[in-house]
Length: 246
View 1 (tube, rainbow, N blue to C red):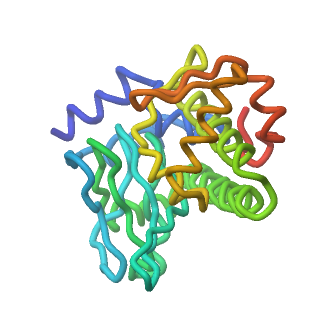
View 2: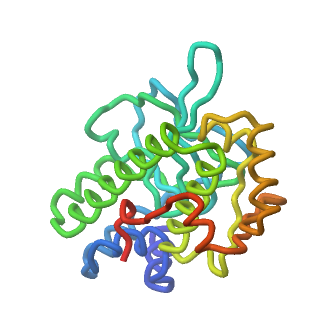
């Protein structure tokens, strides 16, 4: 299995994890080898299952390989707040090696393949300055995304919130070799979007319909088709600088 996963990065240099980290800097062969060892234990989650739950003390760090996941919390009245969408190449909980206990949950959105990475293996990263900087960069980008979400929720109307999120997800997927031709699979329900954007599913439905009628984008059968990317960016006030992409 280890040899197979090592071959994955060698045979496919466009693997999402590598593509994401090399937005920061090109990694030397020894760092690529460490990344390949991170892919030795990959597990599949079918349907909508939790990968890890709030309060858990995990033994592994989790990395999305295929599919989507989300960070979420449940408030006292039972409602869910999604605080991040995780796509291929995203670490779910790299911080856990420092904090020890999860303060939120990670759930798969549809089928997802997730690498389980031992804390010992993550500790090796500290010995690799280039890889440490790349992972630190990725964490800082995650913080930038969270700040952008706060602005989106606090200062944009419903239509702009949806448009901004779609532009962000499209840019993030493009950076890891997905989302070409302004089309990408998005395994989210209107409820998922509502839980991320502070809107009801009915409101999400109205917004998506208006964006479709204006010829900006369509969302059907879990697929986004952006018909006019520049107009959608202008609608959302989207500037990708917070993603720090090349």
